[in-house]
Amino acid sequence: MSGPGGLVVVLSGPSGVGKGSVHAGLHGLLDGLETSVSATTRAPRPGERDGVAYHFVDDATFDRMIATDALLEWAAYAGNRYGTPRAPLEDAVARGRTVLLEIEVQGALQVRARLPEALLLFLVPPAFDELERRLRDRATESEATIQARLEVARGEMAAQDDFDHVVVNDDLDRCTAEVAALIDRARSGL
Image 1 (tube, rainbow, N blue to C red):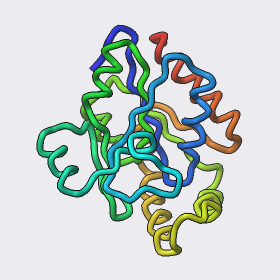
Image 2: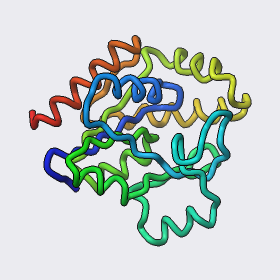
Image 3: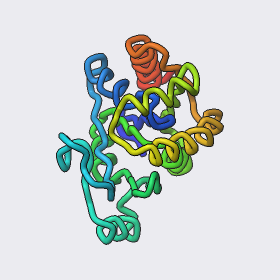
Image 4: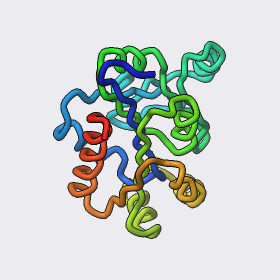
């Protein structure tokens, strides 16, 4: 899937690595960047609005999206399902936009299989204990959920070789600038 100058960029890595923070910073550094809004079966967190943070859907709606191939990728994570609606992404790429997907590793690998031309970027923490600290500092999840996310993260770290670039998020500004530079290089065909 490509358009004149269009590009799909996947920003992935374990939960708590800072994908959302890097993603937010990219909008101030790059022009022509659109965000893909994922669909999810999980309940909204405080402050999240439908259609902005996510498209919040019930299980039956998500099942229909899978059955009709309306999702580019989807995965189950921490008891919920998440997926990337295909139509808005295809439209943006056809208009020459760079579309940023902030998704978990399982979904990123599906994108790799379906869109080999996509740019896949994997964020890693400077150390695993830093990842645990970040998850705990969120103060939004139970201890059981944190432990489940850490267990998944251990497995996800092994997938980094399947990505085009691995970027260490040891300093948010530096990491965001490095990701922006990688996207700029890909957009210019280098």
